[in-house]
Length: 499
Image (cartoon, rainbow, N blue to C red; front, side, top):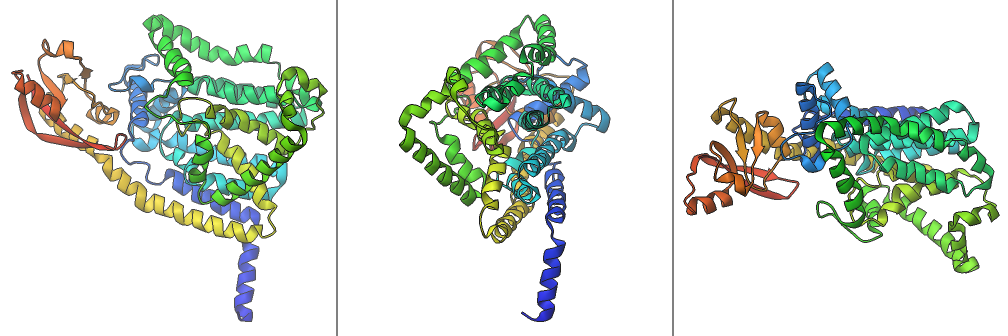
């Protein structure tokens, strides 16, 4: 290396200081989150949420959640209210639909940087921000309009507020904590209580901060935080005589705890293995973290045996003499953002989403303690940015092409079925994105309704052949309409018929 090359290298290193690198990465994250977000809707959830939001805007009814093929995707309404308001301000489009979820993922990444900076300093904060923002799975949540993006943001906001309250004793953090709980409840219900409430309970095991945790005054503030959800629930109950609320209690609480939903299940340890993939290319640091802390747990068990389990019982906490540290705060945060969901029969990738910011901080600290940390970081971030570029410019555009099928089919059927005529849908082929782009009345009918219903029908090719063979007076209109259902990984063969 010549003197000139060495000088240029040193100047580049000086320019890429921690803060400048952070600002450059924020800009790259912004481009990733907002680039290409006008692509067709993703089934199932995103298209259903888009349908709920647009229906609320068009009807002015912000209590009903009625949209074809979308019954299993109903949720508490905050996500739909926000999307509907953004539609009203900026117009109805896929990009506008994904605007707020993208901002929530950006906000979560910035909160992660902030909390890490407070705990460990700016360099570790840069590592944690990079791990969270440029891993395989987490940033993709900002490119699809799901409620989980909002939930993880409010969860992280409450978690950061909790840490600041313990450290500073400033009342504004109490208000911010309970505001996060309240908004999280309006997004998805119990998960925010499981994460933040469970973490607060575990923090009571630390004697030195127990009184501080109790000063959150849960007996006063929890009912207030529940109030917006309860008010919505009351009006919803009055409107449909409790149909929606009873369904939500069954589908989101009772069934999830005992049975898998959408056929997605797995044994305890599923998410432990899933993180190996979703944290790529930072997987090696994750394995190093597991190895180090696994040996510490083994040493603790070897020293104290299973006697350490006595510390799990609340009535033993007064005898313990734990000190409050940043790492203990983070590890306790993992219990109800990750470990709790390992015990559920249902296993969806979004369940432990709140664990990703906490894991990123712990992995950032793990990396910062390596003697060759800067060299390793440069390798990891380079691979991450190459991966993000491939996802943005190669994979997502190809995936977007697959999602154009329902849009094309909707346009074809719009040209055939008269504008004010209801399209009847029969069979298990429901695709919410088709209903969104068709944007005309669709009625799902059952076998009992079939014989007495006339008009236009959307059916599968197999149903068409069966009913045609049985002498049902169906007249096929046009050719077979192929739709690739990527959520089911198969090609649906649909027909438009008239009876």
